Image 1 (tube, rainbow, N blue to C red):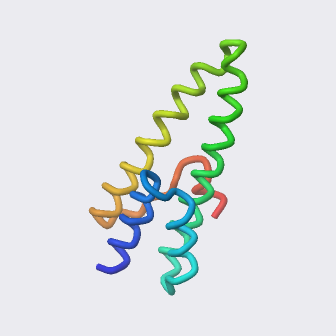
Image 2 (cartoon, rainbow, N blue to C red):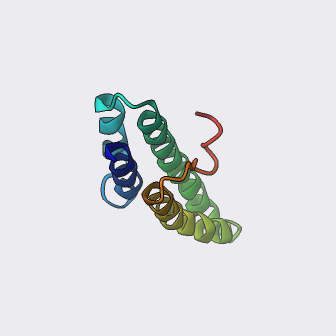
Length: 101
């Protein structure tokens, strides 16, 4: 039960402290699954930040606008999917970085 709520908090942290909370849970948790999810969440936020920054730069030549929209939607939708999966105790990995960890 504690693991379930830890995962929910890690996923939800994307909306209030996307880098701080996963780092804290990685450091204080003894559960390997929680550590893996916290690393995935942190890497996802870093990768999405880089992709959005690149898209903003490319939006001046209009090619970045579709990417900016897609990545912007992903930043909000992916953590919500993670929260729902964590609440139903289903295993789930973040897209893009889930296979790295």
